[in-house]
Length: 520
Image (cartoon, rainbow, N blue to C red; front, side, top):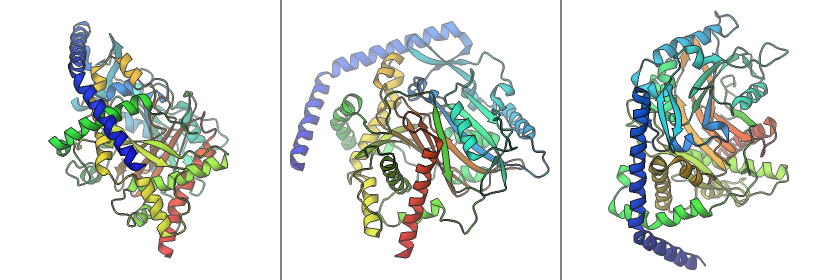
């Protein structure tokens, strides 16, 4: 059977490659026509808007600009600051601090994209200079107030508030910073943390570029992160340049047509986490190791993952977490008496370019596809052998080159094709998201981070839903503590309690893995 599938795959790749070669003159002519059309539109827009014109959107910026139905392509970052003792209980002082930092931000040339306005005309998205004055109170504002019997908010109330505004536009700007007046009180801690919600449209830049900008211009004591996390010379950063050999290019050309035809035309997701149409109602939640956790409490998530990671060769941090997450999703389906899907497709944000030393507001990340077994995950994790079997199933096939080739084909297609084609064609190509769950992992903060005397204690973020992708999972580290965030549409998950249980069971599964290893 496996031999027959290999022959069919070989014949399909060959036929498609021959078809592409025969149609190459027509394809080249069409692409040249679109390129000429794009340049003509750019010149006409430059004439019409004069010095206000800032150019056409490039690369995957165009894909994010076309996402208007679900979450408005707006990502959200939550920062929780501990108030200094000498400051009064209101957040006016914190608000003014951010507004003072804002005045410094809009004077830097590298960040001018933050203040451009996105428009569409004659089939292409483009940027123009913001017409309204760059007043700080248009960007840095108070977070909505929740009527409450107490002076502080519960975690559930804060999640409900963020979920209610996650589908809201930024009122004519590409980003906004909302400073909360009501502090958050954890159930197991007496520390009051003031929430700050940073919302930005994803067409500005990807998460790494946004976090670097925010940390450098708004926060203090982030030099350690610049040195170790976002250092372009760090060992864990890769580049696509070394991949472009003649042999690899031939294999990409040979496999590419079949892969793209399957992803664009044939692939369909059918599971409880993939909805027919998105709604305007979102649920957000986060869980993880918070600053108030006692030292002798349950095993922290990062320590648990590092303990398990030594079991399997070439196993990543994300593979371990996804193993626990897959177990939690399966338990959720059985608890709700939903059909347990054999697999779901994860759209994992991945960078193919090394981070530059100078911050550049660009989208360099692409969602590459990974198959996550749920119903097909090997049963049982009570022994080390069973756990290794589960991790290997999540890790995926042994053909690492094929996985890298597919990921690079996706990256090149999303990075260069959208900027060439008119917006209507791009929307048609990306009208159906090809994955059920979006995953983003940002190693954001190392060491203590503050804003003057306000200490950052916790942070998390949520990616926007993309078309019919209605579930998002995010990982972020703050001073060695892992925070897992999740956003879901109410068409697939009904309330915050259900979503929070999925995350808590994921963390508990990680803890169980680590305890089982230590006991053996």
